[in-house]
Image 1: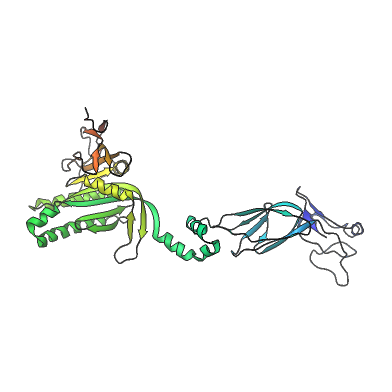
Image 2: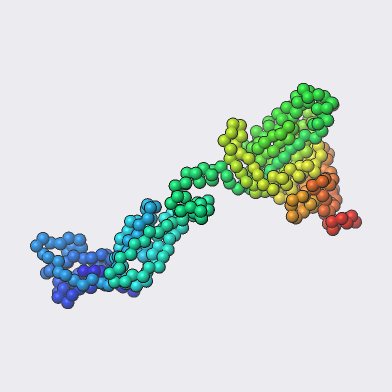
Amino acid sequence: VPVWDNGQGRAEFLAEKQLFPCLKDLTLGLVQSNVNRELLVRATGPVNSTQTRVNNSPAIPVARAPGGTLSVVAEIEDCEVFVDGSLVGNIPAKVRIKEGLHTIEVTKAGFKTYKKEVEITDGSQILLRPVLERNDPLVSEFSDALDLHSALDQRGKVAEFQRKHRIGLITLLFTDMVGSTKLKQELGDREAVTLIQRHHSVVRENLSRFPTAEEISTAGDSFFLAFAKPSDAVKFSLLTQSKLRELARGSSRPLLDRIGIHVGEVFIEETSGPGKSKDLYGIQVDTSARVMSLGEGDQILMTRFAYDNAKQVLKGQQIEGIGPLSWVNHGPYCLKGVDEPLDICEVGEVGRARLKQPADSEKVQRHGSSEIEEVADPHVVISTRTVYSRPGQRPA
């Protein structure tokens, strides 16, 4: 006895007139629990089994409800199949549905839902082979050029690519020893290299105090470092400058660093070479280097986002070995390759740091001017007033 959902919240069944006396004890609950199935009933007596036929009791031919058969198969396992919003089973699925237009959906976690409208006519047999696309954008890119199944075969390679390549918001820091070339000329390579190695020891010792920081690269007397937080980058810079000043007291050849800090999104490439874990690429790396190039020895410069973030986090904190801080906004500068002017800011210890407005360079030019006002209480931000002028016009 074919049983189906009539779409109006009720289950119905179809039977020849001579069957009605046999079905008089068939309950609505039994009908509803067997939607889209066929009940096998005996010729006489009430129905007491939905799947078995009593021996020697031949089934009575009955009319079928008008409809067809839908089969759904796919190479991806454990997909769920829905007909008009109702779950009918997992792939491979075969279900009989009534005549009419039906919405077929195939779903699986991590994949985009496959959806198709299917017209069922009486006696039709329809086979669907849905192709599911991964939600992962890298696999979607593969799918544009390759068959989805081929892309899935490359899943291991895709996962490896994702592990090695990603985009991240990083605090970037460049250091550069001022006057190192002159140092080599005056002292000779051997003695100069000894001093540079001492400088490198100071940098790496301070860097080790920040678990989330990392040395990206070093070239000669310069370092490229990455930090998770702008406040950590500023603390590292203050500690490094303080230690280098301390070493300079007993030496006729002081080692002074200029430091530039910038926050931006960069392309991160994981590497497997010995002693190196990643490389960073992008315009933000160049911006950080240009901020550093504006500074002089014993000067810490940074862009506005890093400045505002670190200033707020460090407000009221006492950094061991560091005196009261001055925070200065030197105003906007135009950097080559950057569309909009960037505020160049500075932090340093009161009475020790330069706190000097950077001069123009070949790749960075001042867009306005600023005034440094009176120093407030220890570790309280110095207020600044910036006067803007048009490019080429001298500020009043």
